[in-house]
Amino acid sequence: ERSQAIAQLWKNPHTQILMETPYRRQKLLEELIAACPPKDSNRRALLALELNGPQEKLIRGQLTHIVNASKELEKQEFVLVLDQASRT
Picture (cartoon, rainbow, N blue to C red):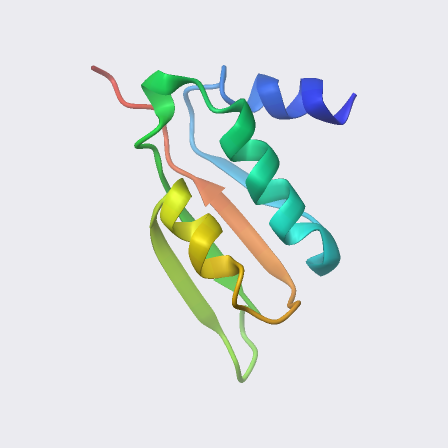
């Protein structure tokens, strides 16, 4: 079910907001990359950590960049925003 839901995310051309437990952040990001079709490989995203907290951090860029940057981060509450699909 989870893998099917993740695959469906890529079929939606609109901006999407995802939340998951801090302990599943890296797994979610890696599953998104694995399910990503080639046409969406440059889709931009925002990883927002500890929003409104003293250690708030925002990481923007292509999803592959976010996956790599996230590996070094502590387990923190987060929100992931996937940009809308390219119209080309």
